[in-house]
Structure formats: structure tokens, C-alpha cells
Image (cartoon, rainbow, N blue to C red; front, side, top):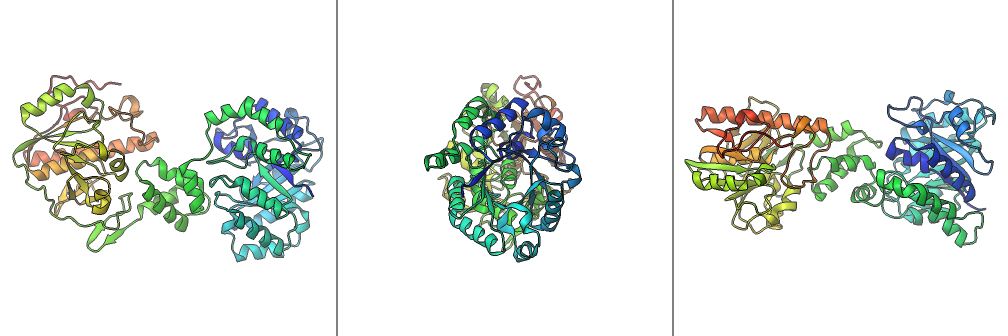
Length: 572
């Protein structure tokens, strides 16, 4: 028996663009499937109530599809529904004059299996070919398999398909799951692969070797993350091995006309996030969510992914992910790092207690050099200011050799790894103790001094408790200010704390910083937290009779003081 092929390009690829494909592209994709000998063409979802912004192929109305296609019998038009999220009442009784849809695939997570079986029965009674798709089959337990085994209507299925939903399978896994499904009474098995580990093709070939009835694939491998099995490779391989029913030429032409450009607009393909998701067998959006925070090193993403795997729902749930990450409470002997720190401390994290730099520079002026555009624009003025005021200087993150500060502060492991080699060898590092000593020694020869930190939700909480820094949010410039206070500062100045550009669209850096928050709401929240921490710092300094000012143009205008002959006009 020749394996059948289902083209899932539009349905699965729609996860990238909200199913907003042009009619021309979808029509061309369907006719390419027809010319290439493909058996089923999955044109999209039939969501009951598509979200705002979703395109026409999230609903796939009969009226719309009838106008779009001249449907061929040899390439059956197919849609997918999600069990529990779709309603079979959305389907009319199967009649070629009423609907062009020939087949429906019902996708089910383990906890939805009973609903999925009922919906398969309802759709079969309406006259459709029906497929059951087991999503995340690696998470199915004995109870779900028992339900599938005891179902009396197995014969209504065109095939029972299983999905390597998170791209974690190797060929041995295919053998295992095909065997498992056959052992509970299903003879026609289908397979849907993802390419996280670059094994989609190998896994599909193993499924065919094991007697798979149908295999999914998509044009140019279009799909979330690393994408799917490229249908042009599958059809080309089958043709080369003597299955003359298939040929890849129409798909290669389709890719050239449409999908090279689609890949530029909404990229998919091999990337680190998908690799980690595949190796950890978790939903790709979880790893994307960790990456978008721009807080974590690869080691931290790896460990956080394991945490998510063990504690979060199978399907992506951002709220649960954030809850799991924020609920981390780590104790190392007498070290207590409260739950708001979004970083797991190093294994050799420690409690510093009194920092070695306390009262190191009593009654000296301090300048904190942050990373706004102004530290580049006004470099000469700032260097003159440092000399005139005889300032002790504390740099932060990346300074690109513009300055050689006495100290250099980091509070984020990812930026430490990225920029520590650019720090002058004469600068002493100021680092939070949760980073641990081993991590620091492995990555720099600079002398390091450590301080303890704690995050609090209480804006009235003291800045210090037993020498520990108490913040509302982790910010490197704020940390540097705290260090300057503990060193014995007489007056504290800040350069480069520029803040936001117009309408909070971005934070201004003098260099191109890739690891910045992309979500505007979160960006505004971070700005508000920084502003509140500045207010706390200023209140503390006023009570301590330590003057404080920002000397370069800044959106934090209440702290600006013209000390270098520059008006407070933030460049947009």
C-alpha cells in the first residue's frame, strides 16, 4: 500500500500569521497539492469563534471555500477542529452542493479524548471522513489508552494519527507509538512530525517503514518554530524510490513563488528555542516565553524549561509559566532569595553579608555611568566632569571602551556573559552574590566584589537590611547607586539614565542592545518600577543629606541637574 500524504501547510502554517493567507496563495497551494499527487489538503481550522485578527482560514466557512476552489476528488479538502474548542454543529451534513469539505481531523490533548471521540462520531454521522489526531502522544497515560482501546467505533476513523507535537521524537519513538496504537486495535496509523531536532524526515520514513497509512507535511516545512516535514522533500523522496504517484515539482514552484517570501515575513526553521523545546519535550511557546524575557542565560533557560515541563500544563499557558517561575524560593544554607527574583541562583550562591567595599571611598563624589545614548553623545563633557569632580566611577553593562570606570556592575548573568570581556581589566566588578563565585571565575580574571539582594513589593521597605540591597525591581544602575551609598558617597551623579523615547516605544541605549523587553506593557511596567526605585533612592539620600542628580538628558526629569552645560532635551 502506498502511503497517503496530507498537506497541512495552511492549517499548521497559520499559527505563524493568524491564518491570514491570500486567496491566491491558498488556491495555488491547493492546485500544487493536486498536481503533486497529494491525497488531502488541510485548508485551515474551523474555530467556533476565531480570535480578533485571525484570517478566513481560521473559520473556513463552506460558502467561502466553495467560491475559492474547484475541488478535485483526488485531493480531498480537509479542515481541523480542536476537541472541546470547536462545535460539530458548525458542520452541515456532508453534501457536495453544500460544502466542499470531504474530511475533518479532530485534534485532542489527552484530557480531551472522550470529547474527541464523541465529536468523531458526530462528524461521521454527518457524512465526513474522520481522522483522530492525538496531540502530544508522549503525555498519554494508561487511562487514555484504555479509553481508546475500549471505544467501539474504531472503524469509523479513516486513520488514528499521532503527533510529535514538540519535536522531541527519534525514530525509535515512532516504532514504539505505532506499535502501541496497533496493540489497542487501530490498524490505520497516521503521523505528524515537527523538525525541532531536524529529524522530521527520518521520523516520517520510520513511520512509513512501520506501515503508516498517512503522513503529514507542509510546503517548505512551514510551521511553528522549526517547522514541519517539508512536503517537497517527502514527495521527491517517494518519487525517487519508485512511488510514481508523487512528484515535487509543483511544490518547488509554489515555494519559489510564495513561500520564500512567507518565510521572510513570518520566519520558521531551525533555531535554539525549538531545539531546547524538542530536547525538553515542551510546548514551543514556553521556550519562546523564556527567551522573550531577555533575562536568562542558556543554562537558566534549560533549567527553567525543566521546571515548566514538570509543573505547567501541556498546552501553552503564559500565566501558569510566570507563576511557576515567580514561585521559585531557593535556599542555600542561610541564603534566602525571595520569590520575585526571576533567576535561579547558582549552586554556589552565597550570603555575602557585609560587602568588602563598605566605606571604601568615604566622602567622595560618585558617578554612575549607565548605557543611554547620552554617554556617547556627551562623552567629552562627562570625562571633564569626572576629572573636575574627582569622581569614583561605576560603569554598568556595556560601555564599549568609552570609559574606564573604577568599578563595573552587572546584575544579569546573560549580560555579564555577553559583555564582561569588554570590561577594562583594571575595573573591579560589583556583582550580586546569587551569581556565585565559580560562574564569575570561569568567565573573567577581573577582581570581583559581591553584594546580597532581595526584591520587595513594598515601596516603603528600607533600602538596606543587614547590608542587603532591597529593590522593587532588578536594575543595574539602581544597584550601582546602592553600591555607591555603601562605599561612603558624599554626592552621587548619574550619566546615561536616559529613560524612554517618545510614547515609551523603546529604551535608548548608545549601542544596539538585542536583549530588551519587546512587550510595550511590560516595558512601561519596568519603567514605572525603575521610577519608583529612583524615588525610594532619592528619599533615602535626602534623609542622609547626600545630594543626587542625573547630569545628562533624561525622561526622569525631576532628578535632572545641568552640571555639564547640556539642556534636558531627550533625543527621540
